[in-house]
Image (tube, rainbow, N blue to C red; front, side, top):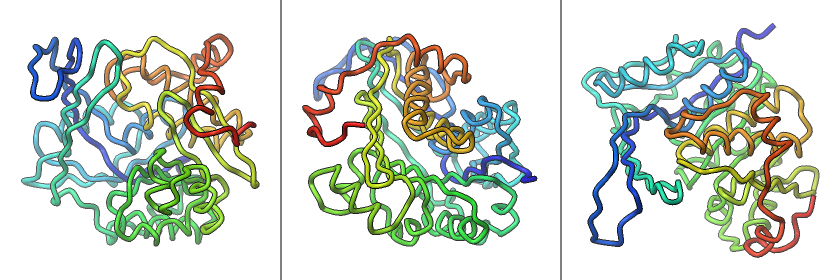
Length: 319
């Protein structure tokens, strides 16, 4: 029996949420309503989602030794996530973000900073840290380290999911060892220079051979390709308070769904529902739900229409 269900390697961040009644025009001014410290980060938040859904979780990453680093560690320590291989970097500030939230729409603008002293070294990634898990989830930021982790996972037959939002130098060394690519809607076209995002997603999957190639579409939901066929899952309509962390929660729910052996269509729906519920609260992890809450939303909530999707992406994804 594996020691952990999921091992996550990648970013965490300690956010400052700035709540605005409405985002100002360029060079304008607007009073803000509140300032809230809120822990987040791509992989850390995905791992909190996995833990909330009942999985045995390990997180590998780095934190600074400042107050924001302590806030991040405190936020993770009460979740049941194993933190034995989190490295606290001395005299180093934790990754931080200032997130401007438009209260009229729930949309956010992110200003972030991560110092080089937080970089995760490939030497920190050892065989035993990876081999004891059923699934590995990574982002692309510290590319040499996650490339090593993905290669180890492949040797041990451990499936790998990746969250990637833009091009990182050396990421071509990661892609051959990926089983589930869940990218931003911009990444496939950036990577391939193919302007049609559906064709770009197909090109990536055909070149690297991953089982599923998918992209999150924000308010439009998610799209995935498997077995030569596209699967589209429209977003659920909720009263959106803050979109921060929605993609991270989607990734955590996707990891859970893979381990539960859900069919792809159900996986996308469930992940969309978990992301939507997180948008009903403030903060990257403010609305992480459990499975029953997500299933209730899936059975009762309205969804974006296929027409909305087709207006943006065309009519080729009809599953």
